[in-house]
Length: 341
Image (cartoon, rainbow, N blue to C red; front, side, top):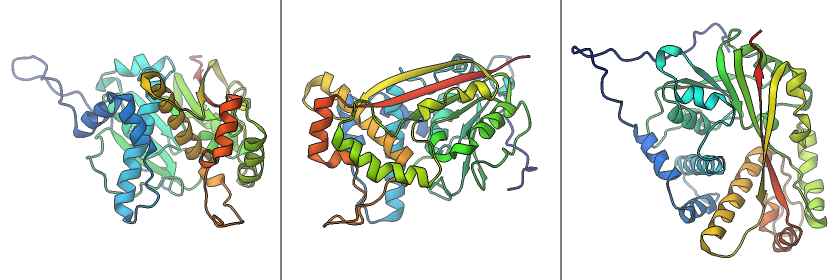
């Protein structure tokens, strides 16, 4: 990649009209309206959309569109867990109040196009750049249902441990929801140091993660994870439990480090609004777990399902065990700040 290529310009504030008054607010884009409908949907609808299985869809382009939309539903559900905020660090308020001349920049690190679109929609006065590898992002040259946000741009690098093609002190916020599924174990510190370099003084780094090993797992699930998932994670050189790497932020030079943990049930049943909320949490956890560890999953080698990639929650015995044990996904959000000095 040519690192000398200039970055997209920050959107400029529109001029005042002849009377000196500010123009009326820009109307929401079709994507912003669609996202708002997703966020304001009843929980029952959200559960239904997250539960849809598109694996048997034959039309490739139609499948891409369906999966992109389902990814948006999963992200909307994840934001529902955190009160509708895309970012949990103190920068959220700063970016929400930002105006174009302030030149606020957000880096969506190793993310998907959907992640970048939502950041661009939620912070319309900021420039959002998604930095990713081509192999990691399936949205290259994809046609979308809605026009892309004008303040979002994609930048590609050959590998996750390459130097970022940005100058020092460039971004106000760097956020990543796929850090642990992209960055190899030995590259964590160098990549975090690269994040520190590219952040402005006082800027924030925020990383979302989920351990491959669930909390309170029983023997059946433990056996499944050890045979079907851990070998693939280790073969890829990734980290099994990113929750144990939070201290790397301090080693990389970050301060004011905080961690938020959200326990998500892995199974849920019953009816009523309370159970709808539980089912949203279940589906949200499963979607994120699949997103992080899908490439590490090893196919079945025996029986009628040989070669397939079914996840453990399709197994009735394991679901029952998880219900008895109270098994939980450990969803974690960690953030730290680059010092002003």
